Image (cartoon, rainbow, N blue to C red; front, side, top):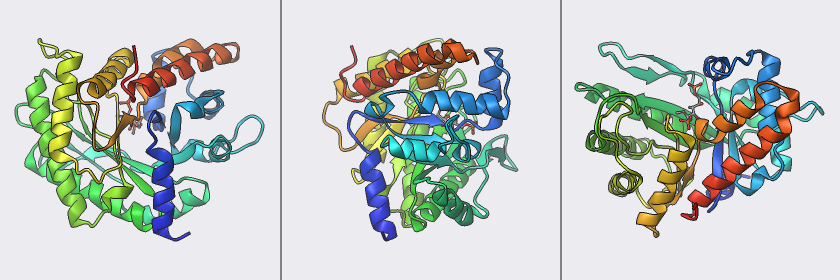
Length: 333
Ligand code: 5MM
């Protein structure tokens, strides 16, 4: 298969109405924090056990088209000795891989950029041999009176575009994740303005780097009030603002937009996604989810690191995935 056919078959399998992408790509630092909050020890084996719980959930493929894995998980196996990417493939779920190497300070600012471009093509080839067909790179933008700065927007957008171009050159579909952080006291309107500026710049840079928009997945944050804003926008306002912002910035050539949940509660994330389909039933792109916390939180809390809780935790996880599948069609009630 040449690279274009590879990209086409991967995006066709991922941009499916009624299905989303599970983000299970927490780095060791992040999963340690999630486990610590529930007093679950964090070792290579507990991380493997937890990912096995998620990925062996019966019927997961009915709601989930792809899973983003962390590098460690890509190389791990189920207790029956099947590699996780192989298990997903057997269940008609596409394996993906987080390829950024995390956040670093952006000199001259109090902001962050994302590292991981050096040697990326070689890493992608190795991940591909392990079964990965798509990748993910996350950039973050904090809202304060002074941020995001023009420099942070330009630098992160440029890096996202360079990453996406390298992915496509290697037959890997890139998930482009520009996250406008929910932390802060900002209003819905401020979030709208920042999100619009960020996505505008991202698509400008994607054009400059000749990224084929037909073979990308956009993973944005929703337009919401800051977590500590005194006035919290409701689902309808969030849905209207998010759709308006996306229609102004995201070309119709993009096949699918899969939101991150970004610290919303699982219920809020589901209701907001559902509301978007209610306010605007006909959209140029598939509009779905690529949640980590909003899919996993109730399941992890039911598991608590104990083997005897695996079955109930899987039931809860599947329920969460199905609720979001319904929301991605505007059919969550
Ligand atoms: C923003 O985080 C992404 C989506 O997760 P939420 O739905 O919980 O917001 C997520 O894919 C994230 O990028 C991964 O968990 C990896 O995060 P770290 O911080 O470990 O790189």
